[in-house]
Length: 330
Ligand code: DP6
Image 1 (cartoon, protein in one colour):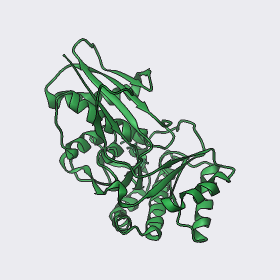
Image 2 (tube, helix red, strand yellow):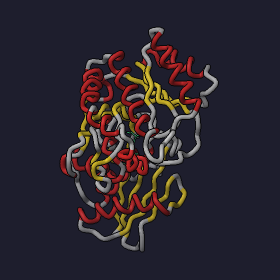
Image 3 (cartoon, helix red, strand yellow):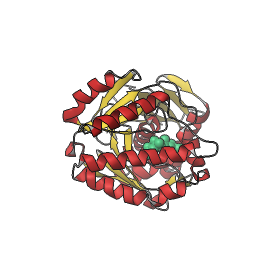
Image 4 (cartoon, helix red, strand yellow):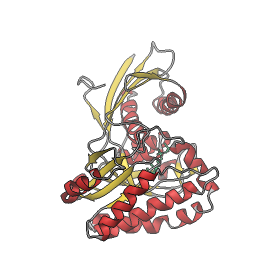
């Protein structure tokens, strides 16, 4: 038997962050989160279940992987094999059109595309909700890369109740994410280890208890396209997460001096009336958000800062979906 499927997914940027799990193995998060898919960035993944293979093989950007990344993929494939009642190993070929491990959540698009392709190759016909639940077990944020546009991940309390859904289509609001790369170095501590440290910070409890309030303000601002409301809550949420990171044991300092230089510049531009704000994931790079109409101006200002290496411009993206396995790509 040889059954192949090919899928694509976008990474996403969280406006209200996921940090910490109630159940590490199933990735049931401590709080609900909210994000936007990033159209210009993409992972394409081809999965073939093949009865002649003796183990799973993973190729990432054409290089054969072993260790943790292969283990994480195999755990997800094992879950799919159980669901489909098959026992063949798989060959997985995955390609990103953006740099991995720099605070752009590559695991989100990777596990979303993998869930889509592998479940289809295994003969399963999963709903969007089931795909989001499945992708979540591979990487929490991947649950948010299954639906399109602006997405909410309801924390839930078990596998069945923890999944993501769209709250608005990509064309609801042309919000731009200017990803400001201040460093291309691979991060020291990945998110998976970071989530396990969250509870060691005395601030995590406070962050989690207040999460629904922030999420509601952010959802309302998004639905009403109210940038001022949106900016304030997005920055507060990101900085709360980084406060937890910096006060964990051991502490996680993702920011570089260049990160803070961009934060300070963005805040001063907003004070001067420009609709712009920032959010930062588990890395030093800064996601600078603004309405599309202002993107040219903001990009020009960012480009003039000494701390800025390069900038990627992303607009709201669609859902993960299957591609024709005959077309080129991976
Ligand atoms: C800081 O989804 O990458 O980007 O579930 O261990 O794969 P795992 O973690 P991951 O964590 C993302 C953390 C974040 C915030 C967010 O995207 O909500």
